View 1 (cartoon, one colour):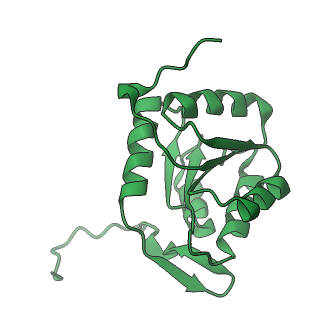
View 2 (tube, one colour):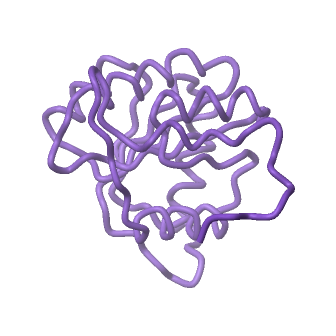
View 3 (tube, helix red, strand yellow):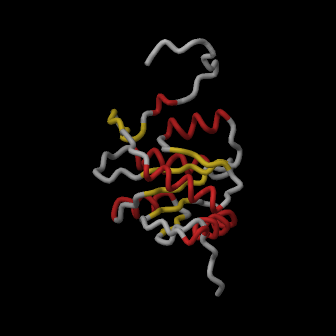
Length: 166
């Protein structure tokens, strides 16, 4: 079996859960994650099994496919993970194939930390994951939700005037 190429030989040494209920796209996703340097990744096709795994063996990073055909299940997983406050709250990266404004807002409201648009490029994914893990994240606690601030949704009417703060 051939060894996957890893950009700059950088390896991301964290535990990762990758959720994609589509077997076809999951196999491609696995190869890209390995090429991006994620070597300690658990793969799941089923929401309940993914939640069970996350509960018993918490991952530091959860990558969820939010393609149109798998979005409903992916959002369900994110919401289930974000319902419980934990000391080691995982970072969640959503993968969008149709990166529309509505999809982005829906992912943010569910509780993703960040999103990456497909097609996935290993070097770009490595940089995205590295910056996600390096940046401190303030999580909020609310009824049935613990995760990043969901109010960071960009405004439809971007402000173009002079900034008066700071």
